[in-house]
Length: 164
Image (cartoon, rainbow, N blue to C red; front, side, top):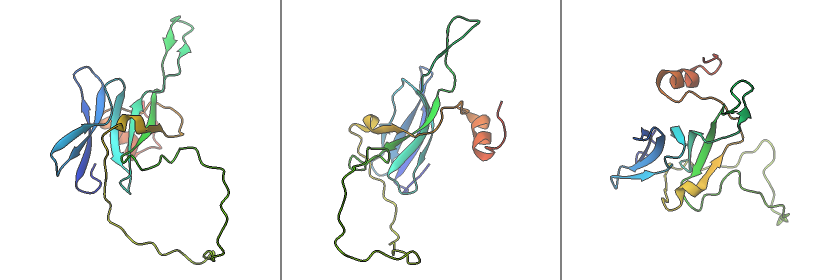
């Protein structure tokens, strides 16, 4: 997926089974590892503002005990994660301050008025140092997302259909 035409993100199957996420700079012709090989990760997508990279990863371990197998069963390992690409970008899930701010007396726009927003070109800034430490999980229920090919495309295109 391309965000600003300078960066590409992709998932790459590794030799030892797991798929990892990478970024590739078209300007520098360099690849950056975003995830390691400990967890299977796939479906990377840039946010529309270019500040985050979203992906699906099998790293949610909540085992149950099988009554027949007398063993641990791991189901619904996949969750959606995001990475803040630049160090200074705050995670949307970071704790919020409970400090109160005092207004300076300026008038806020009324309900019907809109603040003028300047349209800015998307620029992706990537700080590779410590990028894996900036992974945050989205507050969605773990599930069994299809991890490859046709099943994944069908799940994304037709979410109302039951996969199986």
